[in-house]
Length: 374
Image 1 (tube, rainbow, N blue to C red):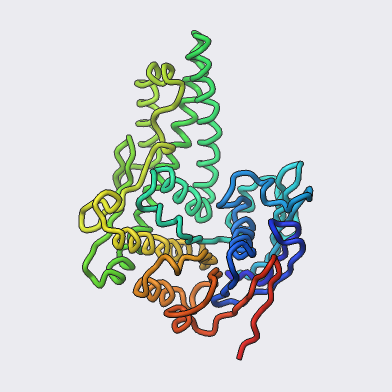
Image 2 (image 1 turned 135 degrees about the horizontal axis):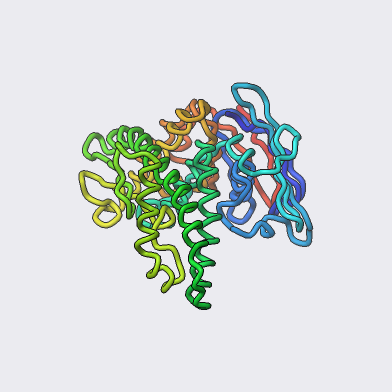
């Protein structure tokens, strides 16, 4: 898929902007605080209806304005598709093909993106919540079933935690509702775990090949899904549902005492193993960066496999964090394959040599101008 055009209105430091992009590598050049990352954020918002930088949609609206919008035209195999996301004091509204979509779940997946930023190195060495967010963001774009099950799980989890607190502080004796909520949570949670496990196994295949190539065949990368229920190839969603429900029933008194749910995909994790060792704990910085790069590049291939379309790749100042070898592997892997948006303060060194006919845009004070090709 290709993002042909992007329109911003009162988004961050952009008052009104219309820009057309090229199908290859689009390089966004500018000094810091000029709007490069804001432009990448806008593309991310157009795809996922939310920012990767803030949970507060109000921050996306320009200062002293009351509403903002991000719109774009996406070229897919079946034709051109207009998309739009609008933010205001009344909330968030999305349109696809000019039609209002009452549910975000019917919109997400129309445009797929893979974001790689310096903080994504935390995917390997960061806290478990970083890896859960990674799975939820990427798998929701690939699978409507995953998106629906995750949304249901988070909704019921919030209700169950609230009721556990009521039981804790008000000593309510009626635990029938807790049983009902436990069954609902186990049902959606089992589906989330099953899909995570399946998609991680497929992602691992792509990441292994990429990691071996980047490490010149010296390292083997494997994934391990870490959960309080045992995950295996033989188990289906129904098996995980039964195991989760059994754990909720066994741990009910302890959960009431603590006022929170102790088991489920909201507490799971992924371990990345290089040559059998957990790279988070025992890997060098180089191994951690190679692992993060392999996982990100593997996302692109898995998304193509699942959706039959390559996603957009957003590279936010990531080249400055990679040495020449890893820059080479990254740029070689995406060249002439994925529409890419790359932010940088200057295009030089390996990147300048490797990128074939980049479209270069200069950004200054929220204004953008395309450099003429020679």
